[in-house]
Image (cartoon, rainbow, N blue to C red; front, side, top):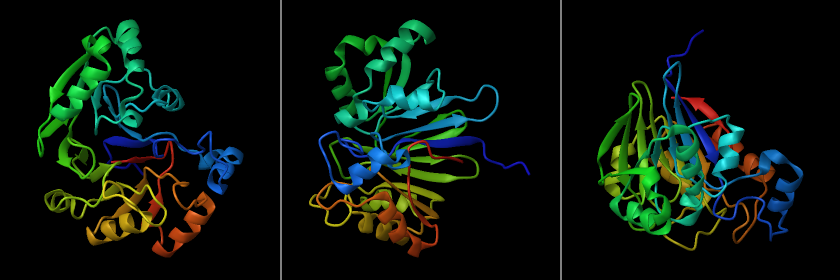
Length: 269
């Protein structure tokens, strides 16, 4: 049976800033990840690839380990780049793109983000802006790439941070790797999405309004009537650690509707 999906969505990385395992940490979650590769997490990013000949590759964010993520997925070139915000765990791999432009594509990479995020990129990577064809995206603005609509929706995190509502002819997906509780206007735009990939940094208590606890993410996703809720930006060892085995056992009560995202997890959209 041939499915009707036109694109593939891939979680490139699903961890918070220091990844799992963190080199300095000996908690049960980090020990588990050292022993079991499926529990390992790189910094957050995502990819959307068109199916069939001529389909484009769109990358969301360039974390410090983006080179390893791209090699893992067999990617040889990126056609478009969207950026959620300017924190180092989301743009720290930007330099990898300079070599791609110089040695392969020979053309600046179309790059889309909020004005503030583009300003941060231009400041931090001033020596390679010639490689980036930078486009300001304003709040609630929609751009279309390869038949997919990307709408930039403001979220509660650093100034100028976006989540992206990603719409194909048959699927609606909202990706927001760093955010606290969604602003009302954003929540209404994403109500009823087929897939919700949302920040779930902390296991239990979340000490900031710029992130979620896992339970907060689940409750918000259910309240938004999202079809499948993917927990991403998982730290696993902030405050109170939780192993992947323990998390998966906890999520059994949701009968598959809530899932812990994993690096390399792909599905059709």
